[in-house]
Amino acid sequence: MNTILSVGVIFLASVLAARILNKIHLPAVTAYLLLGVILGGSFLNVVSGSILAASGLISNVVLGFIAFSIGRNFSFESFRKIGSSVLWISILEAMGAWILVTLIFLALKKPFHIAILFGAISAATAPAATVMIIREYKAKGNFTNTLLGVVAIDDAWCLIIFAISLALSKAIYVRQTVSNLFYIKVILSAGAEIFGAFILGSLTALLMTKAKRFIKSRTEFLIYSIGFVFFNAGLAIGFNFSVLLANMFFGAVLVNIDHESFKFYDVISTVDPPLYMLFFVLAGANMEIGLLKNIGITGVAYIIYRVIGKALGSYLGGHISGAPDNIKKYIGLGLVPQAGVALGCALVVRSDFPQAGPVIFTTILATTIIYEIVGPVCTKIALEKVGEITRFETKPENKDITGGNC
Image (tube, rainbow, N blue to C red):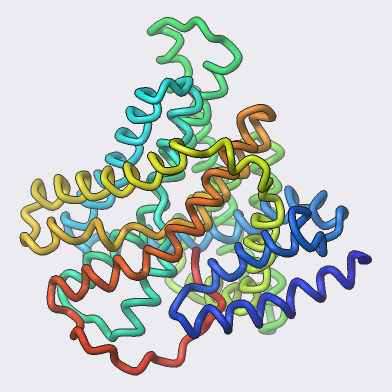
């Protein structure tokens, strides 16, 4: 099948797949991942080799858009409104998953550079599935507001954790014998990369804000906005910075220095759903089914201890911040879904670690599908437990089935 026909089949099949899974209240992300597995080389082999070869480029582009959209949640105004509970819970649930999964994988005799990568990726949470359930059942209340705040900024902490873990993992992978001084150097190097990404994102945001006065039409504004997302991602690659971090900081600085920044996000949101769809379909198509037999206890441990780590971390964060008991007890159930950022990090690992990378990526992809199926159910249970939705299902609202933010 030629490349153009492949793309056409992917787009049309994705609409059908998302519509079908929407009938059983599963997010579009799950449909896209499963569709990619089916259309990939392991089954129908519909996705052409040229498309798979370009998946690295497509991934960098889409991750740039995802990270940019995450950045908008970092406005100072939002932080003043959400209070200390959201900050404490979001930081500690991300760290809880990171630390616990890393320790469990070390107990399973995994090398440290592999264990810490699994731990870092486990920190991510997908807000789309959580938001979908909240909208569908019209949930309202303090618990719902706290949950929305936590899932909004969780991925930002994940990206920072991942940057540090990746730098540490690379260094240990190259040099097996390390000293305490070596660890300090690696952490300082990771800090320098984070700072460099921040400077790059800040300068790009400043330039974007200053130059927008020359834009005269909505069409120009759309092209201008997309161009800057590409521009910043490209510079990040050129400077060997993380695309995820650089574009997250780009979005975060922009939302704080431009009171009309919502226009950039709104116009980009009109064109990015097809990019997200293609990203998830290609992620599924890149899955190596033959590696599933190697996952075994690793995949099971990841699924179980990621959830436990998030539950313990969120409970501790709620306790420190004085959150109500129902938030401390049940908010961890709302943090089960995992999708875009986790897969993006896994793709980076797949590229940087030719030997272990494919197994890590396949593990994360397989567990993501499970999380995206189980996650919405867990969120609904949590909302029922705290009494912010009724046990009788209401008629779902008309909603976008593209999956929203990842």
